[in-house]
Image (cartoon, rainbow, N blue to C red):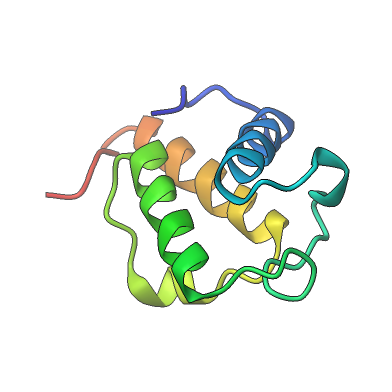
Length: 96
């Protein structure tokens, strides 16, 4: 899990590293505006791998509709940052 004090830039660095590892793409191809399907050629199996990794990172079960709405690297960064920040907020925590 990521610490709740990470900046969006630090989350982006983690996402970039994860995508390099999962999909064997160079870091120069992974920018905030990069489209997951069109630019990185991710297929349905890649999407499942990414979803599983996002749930590992956030330690939360993420709704399928939320995962299906991810289109860009920035969407992924925003999801992780918001999820981790919400966990740290008073009354926050992992889903039961």
